[in-house]
Amino acid sequence: MDSFLIRGGTRLKGKIEISGSKNSALPILAACLLANGKTTLKGVPRLSDIDSMAKLIGELGCHVFRHEPGGAPQAGADGQPPMPALNGPLDIEVTDEKQCEARYDIVKTMRASICVLGPLLAKRGRAVVSIPGGCAIGDRPVDLHVRGLQKLGAEFRTENGNIIGEVRGRLKGCRMYLGGAQGPTVLGTINVMCAAALADGETVLVGAACEPEVVDCAELLIKMGANIKGHGTPEIRIEGVDQLVGAEHRIIPDRIECGTFIIAAAITNGELELKNCNLDHLIAVVDRLDEVGVKIERQNGTIFVSSSRRLNPVEMTTQPFPGFPTDLQAQLMALLCLGDGMSVVTERIFPDRFLHVGELNRMGARVRKEGPTAIIQGVKEMQGASVMASDLRASAALVLAGMVARGTTRIDRVYHIDRGYEKIEQKLAAVGADIQRVNEK
Ligand code: EPU
Image (cartoon, rainbow, N blue to C red):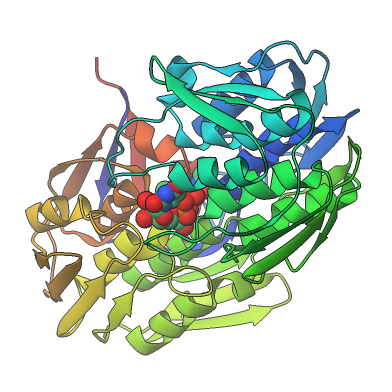
């Protein structure tokens, strides 16, 4: 198992290219099951979760081919190592529709596997998907996915840990409410939208998620021939079509990776130029960081981040888009640990998503959790320590804290980070971070 060794105290300076969005690419790969002919996706990041999804749709009869990277590695900042070359596009084509089962072996490694449920039911009339188990960030049921597909006419039963779905004839469009106790569901909206794209008649999804990843998937489906309106709003209208055909699409930039690097610049008191960003996807993050005292300027698709030494404390609550994303809660908390006063962070999407609190406290932070809220008393300095990565975003917060802590931080189990941050240590080293991947058996 790999670990990161980070020596804190260096200011980041230089350019970083933001990768394509993991959370957009994963359901989009599953959506490729709906199309006849080849789909070409650009900007798909190289991540272990993407490998898992490619393997899953491969088992479901897709031929998946990654082209060679485009261009040479790009030069790093003065005297720093080069940045990685851009990824080559991915071709996906369904060549065999017999297999309809998503095995536990894959589903247990990646919950986004549930995204094959809607496409399989709509296109093949049958799906067997292992029920995703527990998750480090809390209970993550899939009841809303199943309920939405049931409303389209699919029948479900559970057997031996599997959800088994079947459709007699064709799915039938209807008007439905898709929200749950914690608000809208991102992957649930995408799952039902994908299925409705091939259903008979009109489907109206009320209480749909508005996240940019939902919009990105809808844009691909439209290129494939789907008739979708209202994506990006809480009411999506889908007029089913008889078939979808392969298309070409570029995945949107990863807003969570971008937000993480913005905070990296802020926490190290550095200056970063981030390329391939869409700041409209981060409007609530910019709002909070502005209050903290982080300067963020945009010029077309590039943003420039710098920060003053004094970090103001803030209050923040995670919310569905366009609110502050839960996927950046841990990283913002790392920054607020060094704020000049007391900050309050409330988690409304995954109320138990606080595994980073204990690890940040081991590094000298003063964070106290009360229910879904963390109260953060800013400290002057954090110290390096041995800490454990527990989930993807919590681990990113530890990397951020490690870069500013006095001394060396060792982060174990960085496979969690590799699930969602493409070459994070190379990107950070290229702008001056002292970070190293080690593998001690
Ligand atoms: N929920 C239900 N029932 C369902 C589905 C969701 O009760 O059937 C609840 C969840 O437990 C949660 C809330 O609804 O309280 C919202 O969950 P959502 O369904 O929106 O989450 P998701 O679609 O499973 C995606 C991202 C997560 C991100 C969330 C929220 C992917 C692959 N995952 O998950 O990303 O935190 O949306 O924005 O897109 C990550 O990248 O680290 C990550 C966890």
